[in-house]
Image 1: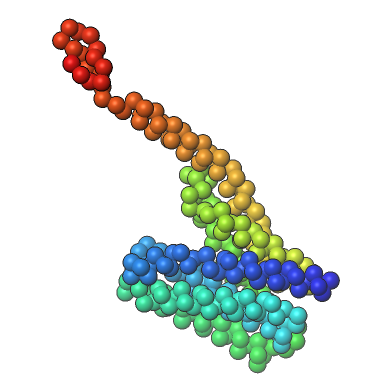
Image 2: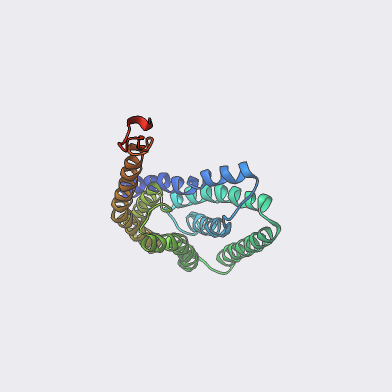
Length: 249
């Protein structure tokens, strides 16, 4: 049981790392253009809060046998901090103020949770308090793709829902869900079970609408090919009223 618990924790670390690194492409674009354009920094600040709370929850004096939760979420907190820092440097002034204010709120929430759990609570009460806080923000993080899923259904297109991101969301949620079940830890199992379900729904939507996208692309290609086949010089009429070849009169 302990071996299986450890294996799923390691696999969960690997898949979660992919999720945290997925926005690198976006940030390469932001840095290259020296502008955050229309991108929002809010998801990265909220993910940072989730990472901080989850990393705190996994510490031995809060929740025994969950150090793998701390390792990946501590890594995630560093990565998300870099994303937030880029926004604070390159975003327009109004966006900087919004992200800066939200960051201050996030750090305040984490500080309150850490302070209360250290000095006001002990043993199981500390674990329950920190576990509830971490679970709430984990569910919020996993729920962020809901707007994209709605867009997919509305447009019948998976253009804005990358397959690999959906796949690793599913694998990450599944890994930590099983990890939580094996460790009999509802504060890990419940939010990640939610993430597993949402990831599965994304994959189902992808396979439903990917076929339509492929069919539409095939029709577009065929139409373009048809136009190209008929795009030579038009037949011209010769002086005797007969069509000439190659446009020659």
